[in-house]
Image (cartoon, rainbow, N blue to C red):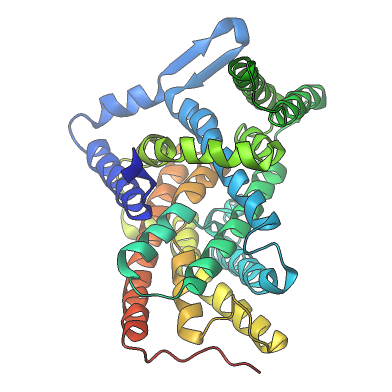
Length: 387
């Protein structure tokens, strides 16, 4: 599974899974596949009754968010975000990349009753953005990838907070406390030294992780938050080993499965003028909002700070990162499901908008990354100003 660690492989597989889902959903077997995705797999004695699609988005995707949390913790403690001087630029850029797309979406959907979809265009897909950078960015300096990674990690932190705050329904605090207790136990066991009892400790950690997921799911909070909490609770060294071991399976199985399930959308049998406002809000806000928000915020903080840092970028580099930030994909698809879970038709149009908006960002960023990489390889790139 070593090949599955590649950013390029992950990006190609995600795109292929989404494209395949669209083809299948609009083929003669589309109805059967959609029915299978909506079929319920219940565990009555645990009170669980989820569709196949929800087992993927609420269950498997929690593992992906666990890995995201481990990476987030690493970046905040030992990585690009550990130093305030290095974190300020990507932090402000990430904020711009959240606020501007949200404002554009709200403006385009004003009065439609669908304003709750504003979080959808605020997300950046780390795996996909780094994949595009890996495919087209041969010869780029490390600071571009570091800035993108820091920005995307912070973007994911915002997405996690949005999911926890805005997509929680009638939280059951007793169940949340039980889940928190399981997370604490999981974190404590991760700090036990290796020895003869290691297999038992690992087994106990798995039980506690599943227990935490179950209680969070039942509490009304989205179950992926359990994965986040578990990742943040783990001790650094075992967390790193876990991420190394699980990442290939997340890239090769979990994320493509989610992309396939989320993109199983029949093309709307309506004219372009009849598409719902959220479609246009997402389609414009994701590529345009991210490009404008990240670029403006990044340029402002650069002008204010006025000093060289590892994360300092030239204008073209900043534009390139901003275009990559418009690739929403995984987290945007999840937020679309959560925002419009009671309106299947609007959710389907939102899915198409996420895929189209992300595709626009993919094409634009591929062009910019290629141009930037060519300039660097020829040694003609302008260095960031020193102030």
